[in-house]
Image (tube, rainbow over all chains, first blue to last red; front, top):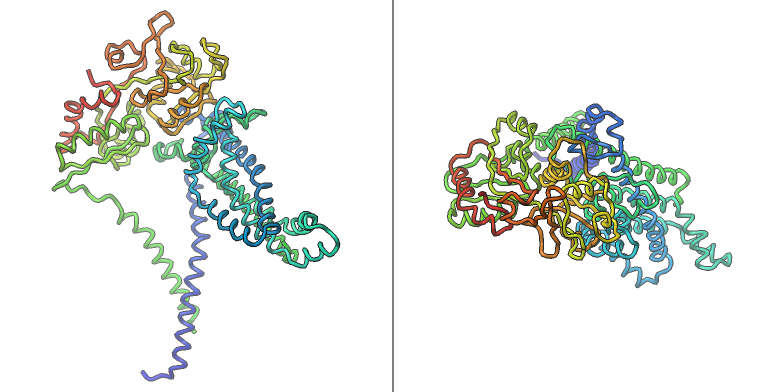
Length: 304
Length: 296
């Protein structure tokens, strides 16, 4: 059919553009859809646990799933303890590293450090777990006088190492977004470089740095393999001052260790999904908190 | 410009296509029906205690019968039996008897588990080689694992805390140890102390016992390495302390020994029946080599 070529190609272009747009939109929506499906799946498999097991058993302190004792409290507290200690170690270290890489290091050092930090993020967790089990655990036992090297602290150290790359790169992005004029103004006022960094640049980037903490925490609480290898997996209540030098059992390690064994549809099976549900909600809460920090920042006018 | 309705329709079609793809893929990847023509493939899974023995059997058997291929994986007795219930394996290895509810679950899926005792295993209680303690009674081991005894001094050792090591609760060894050592074969609700470290593997227990002088662990005799020290065990305080070995298991003097099982999905036939017969006959030669105890 003879038609004006210009008009036809324009129509073709608009058609292909529409197709691409649709595809992108679908992919975007499907990501959210998959999260929703996972949540729905966890709900249907996990909620029966809250009906099949009396709540005082489910939130009791004894986790002996093969003897019908499903006290998930030690697991919850174990996860929280390991994650919090990991953050206490990783957050200052990560922010300091980000400050160094962004503000202090000369150009050549920055170009060397950034890829190395990215390599850090790529180390498989099972390798780190092995490293923790063989090298770190004996050090913790002999130098800190713990009865065994497989402790909450060992787990926290490995997790801190794993969360570092996330914290460093997010914090570094936040520092990067602080306008050059802030630094110039600080220096022009007679502040030293250190005073400028500590009193001007870091406070200006604080919401981004807070987000780094949140994302690092999300990374730490969900980690499984390394934690399973180094924390000893004893489902004891991590209370008291010595809890950090005693073994703990985290929610993730419990799910990983026990899910392969359970008969599908049994109470134990549903309880494991219930634990996964608690974990999911926790991670969701952390992520939402970090998102709200980010949105608040936008509303305030773009300054990180 | 495309009409909005047409756009919606296309979007819907795409979504449907995606959904259809998602729905059909599990079916197309479903297990291919066994073709008994040339090569026979037997799936064998379960107890980590048995996995090395099962591998040795497969190696020896396929050397004589190259037409049969058998794949062996571990994971724990519960894992193997669960796989049999779900119909994905032909043989489940277990270091404990099948539970009543597992049996019922299998029957509900149309699978009748058939039990074979294929070897015996002694459970060794191990400590660090430099630990001066060499012998314990069953009662002492029970008290240690329930947390009643927490220092080696209380059983004649050094002034050190005791670190308890155990396998994960999906392990048949764990179940056997809990019922026959901690509860000493009696009906009770005794449980392992919450301070017990649950190790995901035999190697995890071995590694910790080798490097930690506070540790006590237990594992199948076949898994004890020379770098760990086995304890001699007495049934009652007055009775002789006995180290685990083939002899002491067969004459019944070592108190913690158990049968090892294979469960087939239904009465075995064809190649599977030949293999099981071989395991119970000639296969017993391999049992001793791996530190297990052959059937009497």
